[in-house]
Length: 557
Image 1 (cartoon, rainbow, N blue to C red):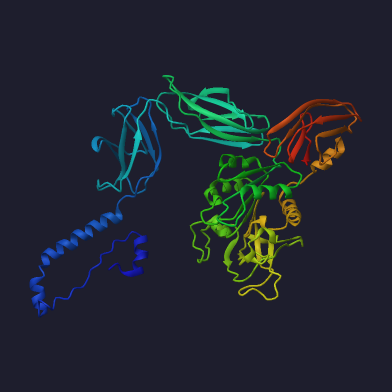
Image 2 (tube, rainbow, N blue to C red):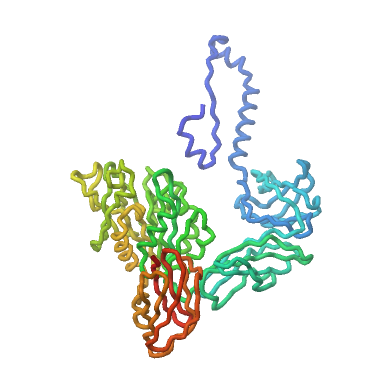
């Protein structure tokens, strides 16, 4: 009958289990001797033996072999498959089928198989499985491939460290691979231009002193016959120093939550005088890898289960491990970090949540949040206009985070209610900070979006001062060299040169994504004034000069 839940620990360890049901024979047999004489025990033993054998081999069969990559090999009638090593297998076998008819079988003791002599330019299916010492095959993985002489698209990635950029493509290539064609364009441009052609076997192309900004590269593989694969794109961000901010809007959840535009407007209003970039994790995911050259990444999410944050956890972990500074503002942060971890089970040392400083989450029934308080005393109040009427101006049921030795408290919640919460009290942690070398990770259990704009600006500035290499602000730098007025502006910018030398070069106005909207060459003598006439819609922009590492935030009304 299944044995209830007692069998679960055995199943998880792949222990075979036999279940037997008891039957009442009293209607036909009137004594134990009658039962023994009529049960046909020899037959019953064979049934039990066969069942036990099937369960044993099923429980101990070699696991499904995990495939790394499958590509066409170049002739149109062959392909290459590589797989991850399976500890319990001494070899691997692949059976190839055409229209469900077995046409070829190949065995190997390595982790790579080359299969040729197949029906050209047709779809074939294959079953891959491991072989044990007893020559029995394990569980089978069945997949199909469309054979073609045209190379498959490359698997492309990029790595960047300031102005050093590496374009990488996976090293498993067709047998007749010739060269990789590299095209590129600025993110704001429409057309790609040919940049380079390199040998396919290199697997990597490095660019030193890359031009600043966001660039999109497109890589195609060409073979000896001149066939070219479909291009694959990757984005890079080149910068002279890592001091920019990326803001990511994650999953929004359902009814009652804001739009991505609402989130972007909020963060634009509270950003410090730094270059920053705003992206939606759902629709602009191609930009997320450029966080490698950002000093701080701010992630705001509303939905928790299987969030965009969890979907990008490997990218985010790599960012932190390489000295990144990450701020997560999101409901139920433990689910953003360990989406498959049950909410009601204490976190153990094997979970991502625990390693980053959360050992438990306390449910605060009735603990409606009205204010978050930084340990320095800076606070931010909930903006009631952003909440549902039923919330009474406060966020409902905000849970408290219990820290372990890996983290320190950054923000606490204040209900500011006449009576204490049912389970817990004010001043409990709502955000913690994990540090490891130059890396830091602030985890907050509520989206910052819900709080007052002006107060959030002060709070975020405090958080960033603790995390960023603040240095000299843009306002101070411009104050030394250039006076820009008026600001906010309408249609004319006046630039006064306060240096002792002439100020010349290209002046550029960009939007918050780095896209150049207007540029003009000026030559301004010491003490002189230059003018730029613009026609821009209301918003936030940046003015920069090609001859100086100075930048000014502009507001157009």
